[in-house]
Length: 292
Image (cartoon, rainbow, N blue to C red; front, side, top):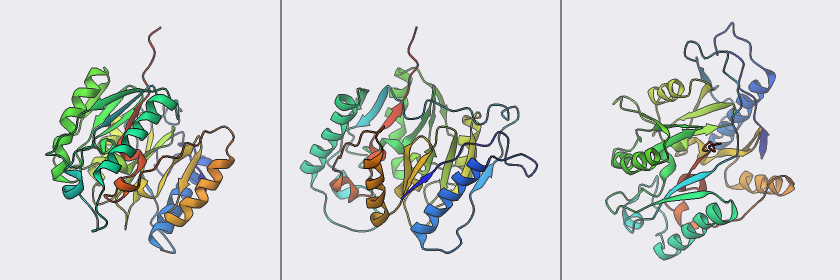
């Protein structure tokens, strides 16, 4: 199903601060997704992190949602088939098929969507390196280099850091050893961030993200029985959050098809699904300012 995402509030999450009805609707929509994924009758409420001092006036300023100029992707290592992290054992990955699907995906980013695609090489010592989304969170001209929750993935940040430096983004590195953050747990609505607290992302990681992107409100959402927050929800357009598991995802697809202002391009991703990979996992979208 699709639920309407709300605007970020015009102030902090302190009890005395005002909240817009749209923002409340956004939190209800995300809470509903968590309930649907876990089968609970009363899910935990999202927790809103207070903004840093001086940021209150800027909260709610919309970014250029859905616009991007660049995409960063990385090739698949053959080691992915046998050594990529999995939540559970499943079917064997057909590497040749996975590679073809990934190439088609990259082709859509560059050919259909007109993005400048930065292609990074595979590293056989890093079997999960194709899932670049987890190692950086980019908003406007700032990139937060994360500290992935899985220790085996932490060296993936090195090449991503170099790539984003070449794009002349402002880099912030997450160096706190008590913090973990996977980009797959970060959902940006254009007006606020939702951060899933999962086995890969903790409260300290969410706090560092909030401090990095001071212009935006940040809410945390408990994630259970899923790898990441975006394993069961994602943005479907301005003010729209697509929510669901396998059955409800098909319902969301039907809603997508009714959106006249959006282009739907089917892309198969069946092989990477076997190692818990989704479409958003395999790229980082960047909206660079055009020099006048």
